[in-house]
Image (tube, rainbow, N blue to C red; front, side, top):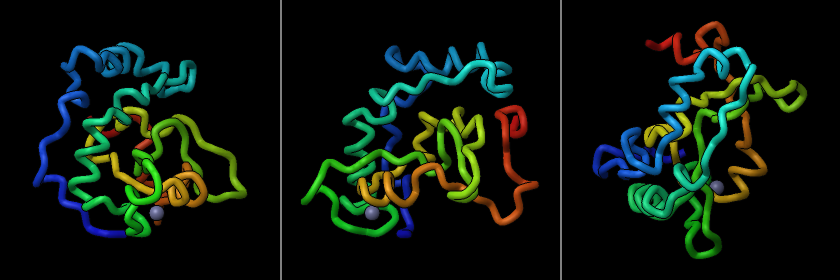
Length: 145
Ligand SMILES: [Zn+2]
């Protein structure tokens, strides 16, 4: 994995919670308890986190390379916008079921988004996000406020 310094680039405006097209954050705050308990699944809008301005910003800051394998993506494919901390659900191991919710509150957080190749994203990384010590996992937004 390459070191990526996002301080050198501005967060794309579409990810701003106050942006007119990004109404997800208001909905998130309103239904937070339901999302945390699993009563309601947070609906993610790829048109926000996958917006062209987000992808271009990530391509620029990562020099067109996959955040995991460092392949130059743009020469062979469009690439994916990856949620480093999985947005919907996470998995500790291939043999274990998905755990809900994922880090839904980071779905539109620029610090959690990376540009990666489809092979790394869809074949290897997927929802995989184990921690060295699971007792330190943040499971709801309330844990960090
Ligand atoms: Zn890759």
